[in-house]
Image 1 (cartoon, one colour):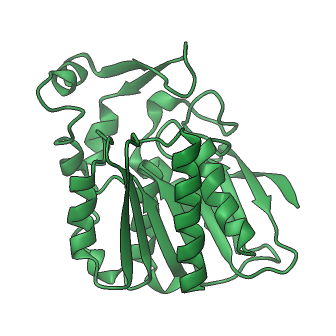
Image 2: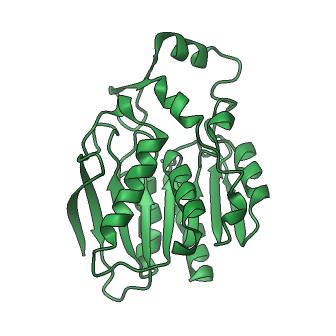
Image 3: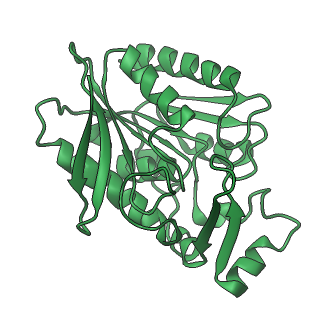
Amino acid sequence: METKQFIKNRRNQKMVLLVDVSPNQNGLAFVMHGLGGFKEQAHIKAFADAFKEEGLTVVRFDTTNTLGSGESEGKYEDATTTNYFEDLTDVINWAKSQSWYEEPFWLCGHSLGGISTILFAEKYPNRVKGLAPISTVVSGKISFDSPKYRGNDILKKWKETGWRIEESKSQPGFFKKLKWSHMEDRLKYDVLPNAKKLKMPVLLIVGDQDDSTPPEHQKILFGTLLGEKEMHIIKDAPHTFYDQNHLSEIKRIFKKWIEKNK
């Protein structure tokens, strides 16, 4: 049964979690959204449902500093890779005190949530059974070279004004404002140097139309992984998955991967 939990992170901010405890628990998974996302997004639910249907207890949560639909505290404009990674760590630390907690557990994250899960798995490889960083950020430096920013002056304007303002795709009419300090913080992170520590099974999925974390970035990461690994490129899919056919395909891939690596 799914329940809503309220906890505090290390900065004493409220965080809201959805915990779905499996009656015959066959593992534990944490599922994390990307920048400006929230725990009820269709693709986050698809990831969570795949784990749930395989008998795992699943924890989804809203990071602090996400968009309007997110229930946790903080402002989107203050979002950083650091705060997302710390929130993931704080959720896992809270879970340790719960009766359903077990190690090693599975980690899954989308985009900025993806790099957060990789950073955790590199730091604590023995605690992670399987890792699924989907459409993941690989490094701050590589982010600057994404197709989204090539051949335009988006980054230049962002740096000069200190702000990036764009309309939300998942919440039309809502304008997202993000500080340039977000990109400065992102430059501190690169998962490639320690990727060899990721000996657990790793699942990479990306859309072939992704202009933020494109297949070329995922292939660089894939090439550095030494353990059991697989990569899937979803035809006609953008960075965030909305299309029901794409979501069904991703759920099938997830379930097969979980079954294989239980």
